[in-house]
Image 1 (tube, rainbow, N blue to C red):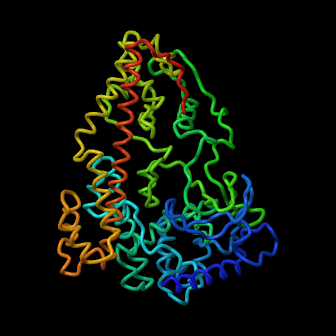
Image 2 (cartoon, rainbow, N blue to C red):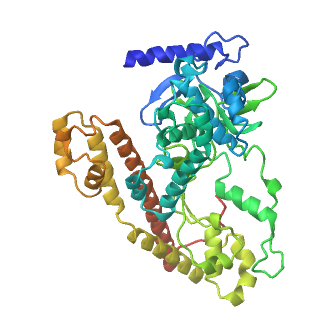
Image 3 (cartoon, rainbow, N blue to C red):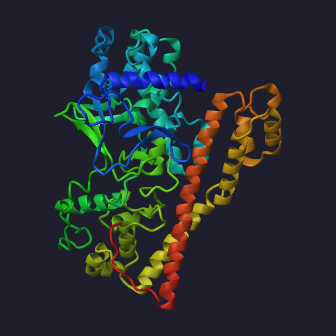
Length: 504
């Protein structure tokens, strides 16, 4: 198996090199990779990816993929049969058409010009649209369950809309299934890159091997960008009855600071170009920033999440009066990945807990990020901590329960014999036992077990992702309770020295 994979890899890289895909800035590259980056395996950081073969400088060109090598609708629709059929379906979105084009190309098998690239695409994905009922409910949080239901419904709806086109193309039966559609749609969702002439984007051979890095401190955090853009579009006057308290200028945002990607299509060289987002030492994994995503968004669109995601956030239930008493949009009222309430959430709660008669005079102070008084700050912190506690108590499991489930999943996934599996299954309980029963895996003797079923393994991978997501969600709430409690204790003891909060 490994030898076969090596042969495929060698064939793929030769194909890519023939197309002019290169990590060298030279005009006539003789090989695809090896000058700046090479394929490597990073077991604790995304699996297969690209590693630096030498020290790389920030901003240095590390990969160039010619336009002719990009899998776009434009390139795929050069197939006359496909082009004629697609031309009759104007109601389909560009993304739906690219999805159908990908399935059509897969149907060509060995006759496809793109075969070396298609052979290296993942065989399955773990995006939310692929979650079964058990994995979906394992998310526990209503917003996450709703996101999964929405993703599944959207996938089914888009497939139904494209069914007639796929029938006209006489796709093979296995390519007409919902599972096949989810695979193709997930490929588009998780691997396409932006191009200026087609909103569906493009699939980029070799370029899609970069693993994800969340935006770091060199860029504005998502809240700061949103807050500045929001504040630039209106003066904070809803509570001030027309008195302009303050106004932030969107020009404060430098274009370089807003750059959240590390590559793009460049017309002057007719190629997609990738640049090092930081300095890398030889052997380090070279990463690509796709943009700012929460863990739930990463799970929805890419099928993975980060244990430490600086863009993650938790929204807690808020009283309707809170929204009406401030000018902040709902999407800015959240808790950061480190358990700290957002700038906007603190500002809104400080005003909400202030008597209506005093809100006008204190509005500017609240919107500037300053505490209004010791009593007000204590009240706000206690309110947030209590709300987080209520959310945690209403969830079916604790973070300790989740840790046990994850340990059990890891144990089962590491088993290699039927005897070991039978012992682990007989000892299983709770959520793991329910999962095994839901997937008819409790009877090892039947042969329908995790050692033999790739379907069962994929389901367990998705369950693991769901439990990891909810555990991270709970960790943020617990850290928020700790932060708020610490602030209350400091205020009570008189050791609290309030500083004007930044929007970071």
